[in-house]
Image (cartoon, rainbow, N blue to C red; front, side):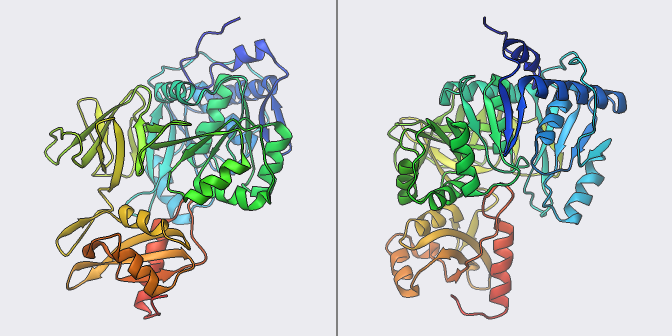
Length: 473
């Protein structure tokens, strides 16, 4: 029997319970919630929130990964409240600044014990239900608002592009303060799949969990995949049929190792942003040109525009403007001058170009663009060259003040390299103005809660080491 498609987050849980109440809905390490258990908790928590807060109120969820975090998130959505998903690793000043800006009506570090209750009437699909956080220019995270429809329409893209459905067992092993993993878990629950998560990502435990539950679909970052490869020690996991990767920079040998680890999996890479949701997708088996991040995702329109807002022809680089029904509502706190709307399209300051087949090529972010010796340089371009060289696992490029050139390019590298050979390889691949003047080796690579390189911390390390007059290596 077919079920109607819910128009808001969490509203479909009662129908899933009616269809198969005992089916596992949510797995977190050794904890398992059936559909009936999960719905009872969410309904009870929604009633508890409704009795204590006004519709639309901010509810701060200040806890680590656990089933209770997912239950409270869904309860906020079902009751018409806005869940603020805090990162437990934030330093105290971050937390204080966000509390002052958003003034949550409730802050919860654990879920209360509540009796089951019926689900409330569904809220307006255009109502905001979630405030996530991403890095801001001042160091304090920006809060971005998403409405129900923007995620419901994103779920339709996941179905169209990745074929995810009720039959799947979907693993999103990272921290839910990162939108990629939160989205993966909530989407799985929305379509009736089983969602698998972890209290804390650990590669060997992740592989055991994957095998125990027969995971068929995996959300991961390139860094997490590299850690899984290293932990597997030659094992293979044939249950996985699709891997969905965000943040695409990874080495060809890593991809080959992932294909051996998951021999039956198609690999889908996507480019997007917290403010935009999906932008482009590289579909499994698709012949994507080198350097491209794929073609527009289902339901997405792309424009490349100059600084005056004029559309540019194929092949010319400019700001990437995205049109879809998945765009965010706006910033709840913080701001980004490079984020602009016009005529149903939005840009967050990423620059790139389109080819004649509709493939998008990223040049870099407007806010990271540097001017050295009068030339515009995108650090991402230099980083891509560096990580393509033997021995370099990760690279981050920054512009530090220089009286002659305006800025001096400095590369922070994780890996093993010989300075003269590295410089020669860079000279063969980059024009002189884009060559880093200094290379700093770093073994311990700082990361955000989502597993990405912490660029702010890396830049601070580069400044400190150069100020101390340490050797270039």
